[in-house]
Length: 542
Image (cartoon, rainbow, N blue to C red):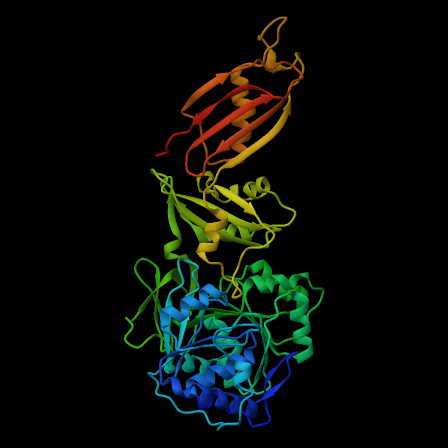
C-alpha cells in the first residue's frame, strides 16, 4: 500500500516552496536514507515533528520502511512532544528544529549516503500512525491508525475530489492533524501531484504561495479562510478545502463573491476519518463513498465506515446530533455533548455560537458552558472577535433570538481567538480565557439639580437623593443592561447609607458580580466619601 503513494515518474515534482522543489526520486532516496538510520530500532514508534512538509513526508515514509509506526504530537510545543514520547514509549524523536539538542535531525539523516529507494508493501492491519484528538471537548487523546485506515482514505481522496498529477496543494494546516496529514501530504502524493513545503498563515503569504506555485488547491480551516477576506484579490485556484469546524455561511459567500473561492467542507474526526463533504451553503452533508450514516432515536449520528479501527463497535456513535435528509445525506445540528441546562432551560452551545457568528461584524466566536452550583447547573460564556462592536451591542443582537436566561453570562472581546494551527480551539485554552472571575461594572454619574423628579418630596429646603432611587436608577437599571439574565432581586443585604447625595454631586458607581453567585455587590461614592453600599440577592431561579 505504501508503494502506491509515490507512483510518480522519477523526475516528477512532489514538493515545492521557498525551500526548493523536490522530485519523486529524491523523496524515495531520502526516505531510504532515513529508513537505514532507523532500522536498528527494531520496531515500535518514533515521534515526528517537522515544520517542513517535505522533511515530514521523507521521515514518515522512512519510518514506515524501517518497520516503525509514527506518533504525531497534538502540536509542536515542547511539553506536547515530551508527553507524546512518554505516552507512546517512542524510540526516538525525528525533527527539523534548529538548535534542538534531543532527537534526530531529519536534515542530517537525508544528507547521509544514498540508500535503496523502494518502498515496502505493508499488511493492511499494520499500525502506521498514532494521532491525537483535537482537545475541543477535553484533553487530547491518542488514537492509532492502521495502513488500511490511513492509506485507504488517502487513496480514495484523489478520485473523490478530482486531484490529478497536475495538483499543486498549498496547506495552512500542519501535518500532525489527520486532516492536514491526509489532504496536505498523502492525498497529493497518491494523486501523483505535489504539496507545499511550508504552512503559510497570513493572508498575503498564502496568496503569494498560491501565486508562486500556480497552486490548484488550498487546504485550510474556517479561521484561516476568514483571514483571507482582508485581501482585495486571490490568485485563482480550483478549490479550497475547509475542516475543523463549521464555515459560517456569510464567510463562505464572501469568499466566493469577492475572491472567487469555491470551498468544499470536510466533516470527520480522528476516530472515524473522513465522513462527509458539502460544497454549498444550504445543502446537506453527503457521505464519502463506502461510508454509511444514520441517526439514532435520539438524533445522534451513527457511522459505519471502512476507515474505522479494526474491531471498533459498528456503527460508531458520533458526538453530533443530526437530521437526515432525503438524499442520503444529513444536516448537522450541534454536538450531543453541547446541550446543557441553564436555569432549567436547554441550551445548545452550537446555536449560541451560530447566532454570534451571524451578527454582522463578528469574525469569530467560541462558546463554552461552565458548571455552577445550584439549580442553574451551567452558565454560558463566549469569546468573540468583532472589531468595532461592543458587548451591549452583541447582547442586543442575541436577545432577538435567545431567551435572556440563556445569553452568555460574559462576552469577552478579543483581537483573535487562541486557535491551534489546525483552526480548532482546545477546551483547556477556552476555559483559561473564560473561567469564572469577578465581573465589574463601573461608571460615573452626575446628579441633576434640585428640580429633577428624583428629589421630589425629599426634602423642602434640603434636597436629598432617596435610597430607593439610588437602588433603582444607579444600580438596578445599569445592572440589568449588563446582565440581562438577572430578573428581580429577592432581598437587599447589608444595605448602608453613609452620606447624603445632593444635587450636582458627581458619583462613582461600582457594581460587582462574582462568577457563580446570583448576587450583585455595589458601592456608590462621591469623591473619596462612600455614600451607599450593599448587595442585591437574586436567589436561585426555578
